[in-house]
Image (cartoon, rainbow, N blue to C red; front, side, top):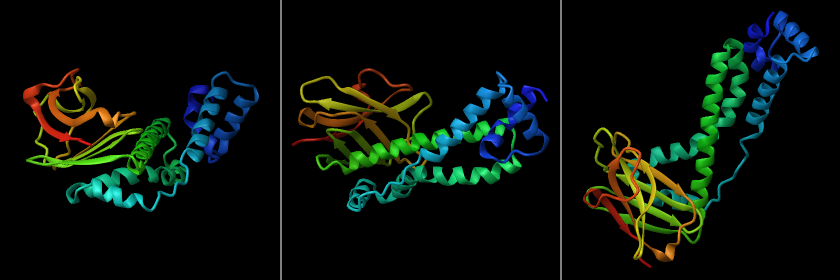
Length: 243
């Protein structure tokens, strides 16, 4: 068999489920240090190792539940918690892939699984960042209301978490953009986001924040991709920080 015919079997070999003539052929290629199959199998083994050890067991602090519930309004609580807990499914997906690949051993399907796994890893990292922010004892919580309403948590060490409800739907080509507004300074862009169909939105901007010099957190409607400074007439949310 050619290397091109065997490339779909790298993942199955790495997971220990390859058998029959394909296994013998691949072993023969590896035995002669095939320049195509050897690195291909090495990459597949690395991916399996990555999936096996990438998700640590973490016991969230018990006191953190209060802050999570306080941040999230009832309307969006389920979506926030689902987002936080989604990362914990990554390990379960890894164990299920062993059986799944017995029935779907094509290269295309393995790449699709790899993409989903990488997405889970990104969600896990984001969840860890959010937990660190909410756990910070020096973080400050502020609320806003009048039409759109919600809550902002500002951590001097970890960044800003925004949770909003009743946000208006955006016109095509538009986005919501968050701003950190310092006292006597120019607003600093803090990322863009779009609301869910029910008008809720969750947004996290990581990085240190000088809480003492921050006057407010604001949100405006801007062109897709965001802008360098807010359009004054399009500012829809202002959450004064105060001291």
